[in-house]
Image 1 (cartoon, rainbow, N blue to C red):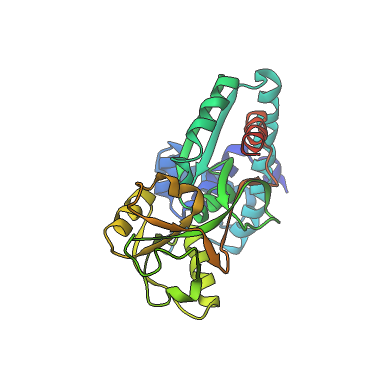
Image 2: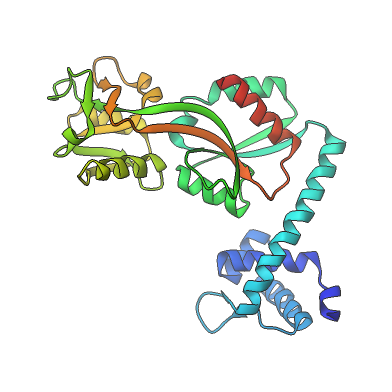
Length: 299
């Protein structure tokens, strides 16, 4: 226990970064610390604890049993310290600060620019930065502590995250104007069994939800193209290369007459968005202000 009393917060931060990346080299790059100094710090921590934390006999720095035990407790300690620091910063800086927000590309370009502009007018001292990825990647980034907030497609693991719903919508079908279903007001999903699908990649929850619903209807969708850009997907549909299933709210961006949008699907595929943040992390006053602002705007 003598070693435990001498443990430094810096050692825990270094240890967690190596554990996260499985690499002393990558951890050193993220921390801006030389690899020799990083290795020395971890060795010192191991000596204080009297236990080996990483198996260094493999190419990847793998946690030992003792290392896994320390990781669980160290994360709790660092979260608590970071939360304390953030709370005191809020007391002195009021509503100034910064927010690192994750956005899926499908909504980043369509729904959020005007909202962000109005937020910045109201809170000019809050700095906003953005990361664009699919919902699955953003959810993991919030889980890992790399993002404070993210807008993702539901569902999400609510035992880990707080959830603030902001948009409720549906998935709609997009086809070429000459497609056999183009003049239909409603389409059953099972009628698409033989179609070529153009969808977002598998890092997007909308891809998973569409696939899961198709499988429930008795078929695996034939996905011929995947993309992270809805405008490119529109162009492929307009070129007659396949059909797409996208959130109904973004079809307004499609060129008039180039794509036929069928909004009534049977069964419906929900597209519900929410802002999420980790339950065990302090949420800055700036982030709370953004959540309240977004919920009010979308309401």
